[in-house]
Length: 123
Image (tube, rainbow, N blue to C red; front, side, top):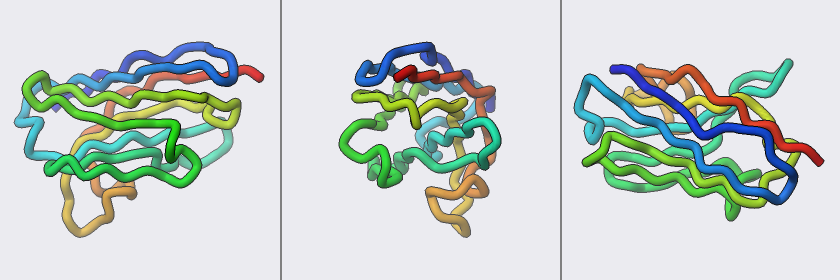
C-alpha cells in the first residue's frame, strides 16, 4: 500500500486547509484511517481517525475545527481543517491500518504511512 498526502501549505490563523490522502495497492475500505502530526522537537501525536464503519475520533484540541472523512470508492481520506491556529503547525501524516490490539489513536494501530505534508499557520 502506498499513501500520498497532500494539501498542506502556509496560512494565517483562522484560515482553512483541506488535506487529502490517496491510497493505492490494497483494499482501502478494510482499514481504519488516521491522521497524526509532528511539530519540530515534539513527538508524533494523534489528530483524528475514522474507522471502517465511519466512526470518527478526534484529539480534544481539534474537536469542532477539524473533520475527518473517507471515500472508499476513491481510496481517499480527507481532513478538513477550519479555524487553524499557530499550534496546529506541524507535518501531518496519514496512516492506514487496523491492528486491533492497539487503540485507533495510537501509531501502532497503523501499518502504512504517507510521506507527510507540512502545515504552517502564522499568527
